[in-house]
Image (tube, rainbow over all chains, first blue to last red; front, side, top):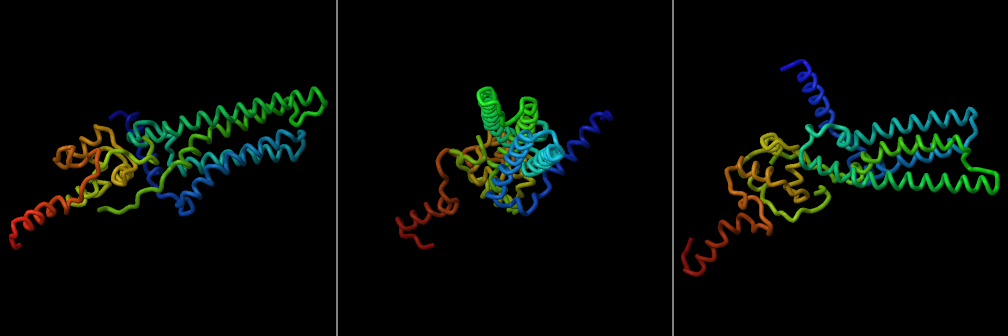
Amino acid sequence: MTSRQELRAEMDARIQQQREAPLPGWLASRPRRRLLAVVPPVAVLACGIVTATRPDDTLGTVLLALTAVLAAAGILTLRRASRLLDAVPDRLLDEREIGERNAAHRVAHGVTVGLFAVLFLLAVADGLAGRSSGSELIPGDNWIQVMVTGMLVATMIPAAVITWRRPDPIGPEDY
Amino acid sequence: MGVADKTAVHNRLAVVRAERGISRAELARVVGVNPQTIGFIERGDYGPSLEVALRICGHFGLPIEAVFALTPFTPMSAQLYGDKTRRDTQTGEQR
């Protein structure tokens, strides 16, 4: 076995170990998992939009940093809750898991398109409001922040959908 | 097929596995799937592909219709003793 293959085998074993680790107790119930699937994306989006409405002052910078921290924590927590299903290569998944991941990606694609459609309409509405009344909710350049926030949320959506749809795991009984 | 959907394929995998004394993890390893997948199949939440179904049946040395079917299985006890009981009632034989 070459060193590259050995490295890959070692990495695969480490990922599998992470995936098989039991979930924390607070993720045992389905309502809690569904809450987890919704809260991080919504919190990041809300925080990003509020940040974009602020002028470039200290509070704005703090809110921007908070958005980044929330996004990183949200992505890591959702990946843990979805057992890395959306992040691992196909060779580590069986047919059920691949089907589960593909179904989640189908849903996530629709949600992502919907999210960016809403953001686009908001940008157009805000631009028109700015032209007619002279006051925009989000100043022109700050729409970049909103788009970056949208992209951060989009990276979370597949894991959020998997977490939302995931049924209760089978118990560790043997016979 | 998503795991949340109930499958139209019925199976008696749990009974066969218990009868042979094989754990889910062991069967999963032999078949090449996640142990959770064996549990989802037993619970009727997931219908396996033909390949996985054949591997499972191959491991037990059983024909596929002994483990998987499109109609619900009658309980094993009824299959084993139900007919005999009926025969005994008809012939009046004492057991």
